[in-house]
Length: 234
Image (cartoon, rainbow, N blue to C red):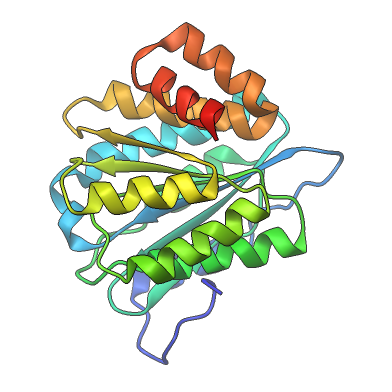
């Protein structure tokens, strides 16, 4: 599970702060709601676009809050062994604040580990979707695709937003999204509006299902329409 490191390696101050404060984020459960896991690659290769991406991702939490009835869990990985998760919460502003304290650190991707965490969360209760934002995939595609396929069986689609869109990661990410029943889209960190629209669309999907996503696609067009089409075919 992401909340537990694989080794006893020293956890840096900002990660410790994240975990301590995440424990204080209230869990709200006063009725049915959508649930979205938001996972981000915090390895060093994302450094050049980190500040822009963090701002956009915070906007996504605000959008989720505005939709109402949506609980979000934040997950990030970085370094060699760090893969951390918050509790579920509807307090989007607090999650955005916690996320802003996470810095990037050199390491390899841990996408399989993230997906295995999502599987465990789905076994405990409702999970409507997972978003993964990253720029690389450095693991065994067979292992990651196996985890993605298990998500598909649990009706938890993975929406993968690929910074840069380059190969070979693009082909791997497309396959992972497809076998999970989700969707893939590249984005350019120099065009923040595109990622913002994609994240808002997924928040709408988690809260309202395919009809809400289709409404976003019809309204927004472009990249949102393309991920809507992928979901329609799945």
